[in-house]
Amino acid sequence: MFAVAQVLKSNGTDGELLVSFRGTDPEDINVKEPVFIEFDGLPVPFFIESLTPRGNNRALIRLTGIHNLKDAEEVTGRQISIEDDGSSEEETSIIGWTLLDGTGRQVGTITDFEDIPGNTCLYVDTTGGEVLLPFHEDLVIDINEETRTLTLTIPDGLL
Image 1 (cartoon, rainbow, N blue to C red):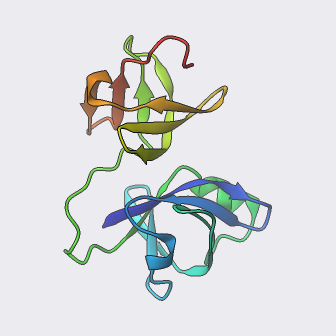
Image 2: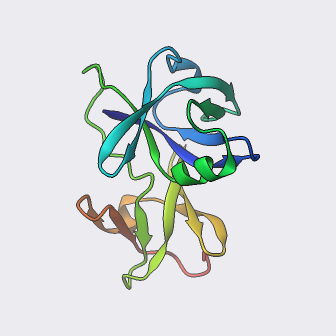
């Protein structure tokens, strides 16, 4: 499986989802093939009923079986994957990981990143709302794939 998107939030009350794509353009998704969302450690297939691009890396989608707000909220924050055809490189996505500050305190959940040349930034969903934080190798304290946590030195005044 290859993660291609992250469900950011529901859009309306009829099951539509706002998703953010990573490394794949929304237009490159084959809507005739299933996408997968993991539940209880198992990939569950869904088919895309509609896909409407919103900017460069986001889209509104409707998936089979998700037809109301309750269903949409259940998949919010989860990754959407496709079957890996072997042509893509091994990639570890930090979307959905927990961000910790230098003291080990939980800051929030990483929802997206912006690859601005020379200034990569992370979108982090915190209790106070979404924030944009710099992501540079000099700020990384620890990356733990087992616990899906990223620990960063966060400059004063950004939170």
